[in-house]
Image (cartoon, rainbow, N blue to C red; front, side):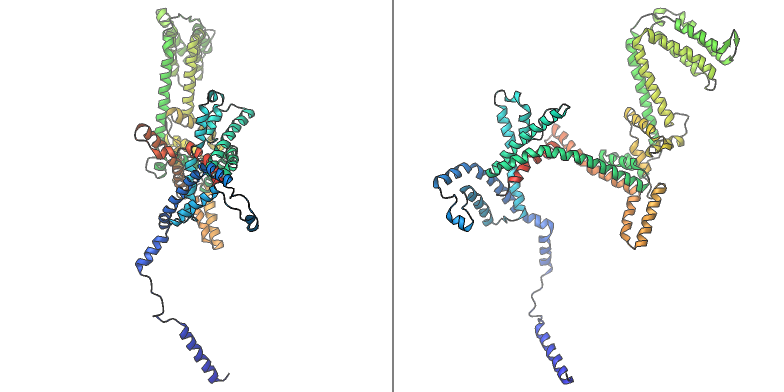
Length: 590
């Protein structure tokens, strides 16, 4: 191609391109900002939801129409048989389309009429409204059948389980299931019968041709849901355990604080947050533990006084021979053939003998009764408490006398033995708590706090199992909450605790740098005790908030205005709704 030809070619190409490009006059008008905003709002989720309301309402009307059409089904069927124009014919065999029955035609016309009124009968909103209307219209089918059966003479007494199964759509028979495979099968069979009848009736009200399908679905639900619930509980329990152990490992605090954080959220316990955020002194939980121990001691004393009331009325005069013998035995510990071996022991035994002799001289009908000898026992106990702990021989000798006084009363007054047994067990429990958790007056706060905080660490060094059991006893019987506060203290750090947690965060950062993948850093927050504690608490609030709100609403409705939402969303009614809705879903479609 010559230069002249090349120039001509380029000139022609530029002209064609210029002619193809639209001029400003040819371009369409640009939408205004207001029009763009209006279009954006209309296509947003709230906008689409508002537009769906008419279709939803139309669907509900169509759902109610399904039940109306079913009520007219006998009339339509008789008309079909009398007229004879809706059965199979030659034209239908050729085209493959048999004529609709009058009832089917009635249903189609209802849908078409709603479409002509502006409803989008193919929309999801219309389908949801239709099913909702059908469910609402058939919800009382099982109850109506159950109530009718209950009015049959003798039926209520003969088959209460079947009647309840009908009323609840097969959810329950209303009767306790006694242990045994046969009883369990009988219960599930009764529920299946109730579910089948209710399901068939509900589905049949929507579309008579689907009554069989509804009955099968209704019968299968009790068995299927029971099995699914068992599997769900097992999987859920395993998943929960796996999550809390994984988070406990990643943060270095262990699984117990994570679990306690979730429980604190469920119950709305603010002690966890206050301790995690450092809003209260660390020793606040120690003070609370000591308060619980004091309550346990007060309860022990009150129970002792209550148990002693009938003993105070026992005026039997008891023999003191056992105490005399114990005094002789105790003296034998301190002396040998009249010679003193242990001066301290001999002195305390002599002091106890003086006390017993003094008591013997008092009026027997007042001071030798079970109540009177209990007072003597307490006096001997006071002498024994004076003996320093390191004087073991003296304590051994005095202990013989004290035990003899106790045995003398127990042998001759059996009621006293039970009271003292309970008192002794309570005293031992309190002593064990004082020792294991260092809650006594002589223990330092530092030691006590270390032992309390060790409750969050499950290992051999902390004697975790025994201390945790004792702490749970203190919470239960002392009326105090300790574990949420201790969990908050364990999770108050932003950085991981323990070597494993710190190594994990370091490994995450190194992996992100080595792979040049910053997305790996998203796992770092799950290695922070403070962050995980907040998340676990929040998850607990979500899990417990709904049920607490419903429970509170139901209680408010009992004393004030009825709370319809709480009643509607109660667990049993939700379950019944599910049982009753499933057969209708199976039947819905026409």
